[in-house]
Amino acid sequence: MWRRSLHWIFITGLLLVLIPFYPEVHASQGMTDKILADQDVVPDEALVAIKPGYMPYLRLNALATLETGIRGLDNVNRNLRVRSMRPLLEPTSGYRGVRQEFGGLERVLVITLPPGSNLDEALRVFRAQDFVEYAEPNHVYHALEFTPNDPYWSSQWALPKIEAPKAWDLSRGSPNVIIAVLDTGVDYTHPDLKMKVLTDIDKDYVNNDDDAMDDHGHGTHVAGIAAAATNNNIGIAGVCPSCKILPIKILNSGGGGTDEILVNGIKYAVEQGARIVNLSLGGKSCSLTLANAINAAFDQGVLIVAASGNDGSKTSMAYPARSPRVVSVGAVDQYGVETSFSQRDETLDLLAPGVNILSTTIGEFVNMSGTSMAAPHVAGVAGLLWSRNPNWKNTEVWWALRYATDPVTLYGNITLNEVTITSSDSPWQLYLPFVANRWWSLGRLNAYRALQVTVPGQVEAPLDTCAY
Image (cartoon, rainbow, N blue to C red; front, side, top):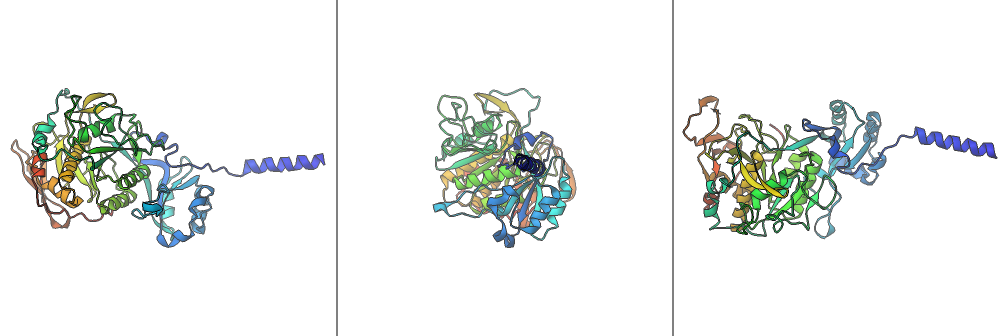
């Protein structure tokens, strides 16, 4: 009897050693430790979209056990020694508890491979399967903050430059217009923000909680530019004084985030009624996963504003700024000259102040520079436009922002229709080709001129398919 007991104890112990352990990893768990400043993708993670015809067989509730219900997927998982799987989107439901689709992203799985795996080879294997629509890395995005050596200014030169005081005679915004700041969070205790931030519905996708407190400072600076309290004898004025701020934390304390949490953040902003989403962030590569989220948000009437990037290229922009469904914003200095660091290509929409911008940060006020600072100026004016014209479409708000601009002096050489023109000291009113054979006038943001538009046109914004 004793020998039999020892026999079973030995067998049980051996099985526990031999059976592989697959820990259940929830969204963003351990994610922040994987992101480094110089990374473009999350190591060992893939985003895999399952074709619609295979979805009835997929057992979402059993993903933690790696028994998916799709035999081919199970075989690939075993061959690649997949560690964990989870749905990209949180299992939320819409109006009256009815689950709503969001750009087909309900079919995307986040798949974690063993450390040190060959991600490119794994993606090749997934893409070769009949049940896979697409497979791509979980791209990394970084806060587009640029700090030059120029001395800080102690005043808000940008607001008079875009004629905000004159615009405020027409509209000071509305609390019904929500600007979602998807960033490092917002210091909602800041005296110039605490009455503006929607702390009852804020969201943190980095730490998986409902407390989007800023632990970096970038998001607070962006929020202050867009909509800090005004005429309150404290600090600074925001572009849209009466608009509300919805902080959604999708960048960690180092300023990094991924496709996975950015997509969830966009979806959450749409669900909470945000009219405007500010993305002062960017990455190098286009992402079909993010593109589908942008398409879904745009189709639901949301206007997404993104910073063009800070690497100084005049022939390319960061993503998602170069998405055809995103308002892309470059930076100018106080003299109305495009900055050397601001990125641009032929689809750039407009430029806005982005040098030595005084705004809120954690517990104080500081000057910062970058296209990150330019984008929320545009988001704030979009808030003024929608407050004055609540029935406008996102394409009409975009049109007013884009066409009611001031001339701008571009930096360096300008390539137009394959002819290089050397820039001079005189302002260029440059016309560049865009989608659907439209021609754009590239200029600098002017809040007052935008608010004077009464009958706008509509921007043509084709689907973002990452085909560029």
